[in-house]
Length: 326
Image (tube, rainbow, N blue to C red; front, side):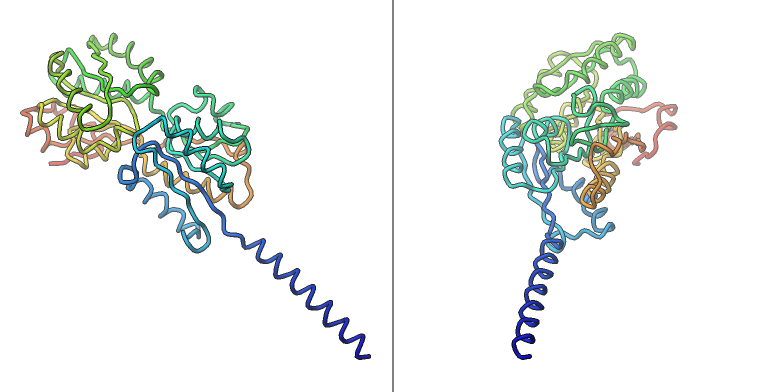
């Protein structure tokens, strides 16, 4: 009898240990990567929206989820290296800020799910087969950046009387699709587009504005770029210093004192990216989740900035704005 009880106890302990091991395996804390080609400070406002949504969905960093942040600090040549590093860490999922980072991660892995927070043109870039059926390991959000550039050029012409020449700040690489749409739009609007290659650092930005003045442009705009977004405060300061009206792709530029912004609500896109992360961590396959496009757009005007450079914005333009800062 004692022998039977001993065997029963041993069997019970064995099964308990197996159950405990299974429970520990099941309760493995997911680890996700985040890759951005700009800076931590430049991404903070959008990451905050991302994490707020994750918390609503029950994910708390340090408790039931961990994250590996990687920032290229405006050095695009580092992006492939950082992408490979996240893949080597065998994270469960990688969130990417835009098209360049998405391409780097896709080149590094075909198995780890990738969620795009705001890719400009994922189909054109070859990231997904189609928006409705992305296939592969990439899904997420598209910000419609190329199409919105044309709209920004139209607004700029309406807002600045007798505008004839516009300076376009662009970074090396990554702007081809945006330029493809902007160049014919400028011709149609009878505007001369002065394209200025710009290094997104203090020295490079100052040089770009000096060139813009030399070319006698009447206003400034930028291509959609994570490095420009990270340097938004400096860009806004230079536009004021050189007394150049400017329109930007993100409302955060106006928050820093910029004149005009028109574009997708990127904080909303980052919130929605968190929903994709939640679905994938709960078992959904990225290839089965359609890529969603931006649904919220904002046109913001800062009359304080207009007054500082002596610009009077026509009433018809003010009436179209979602928000006017007085």
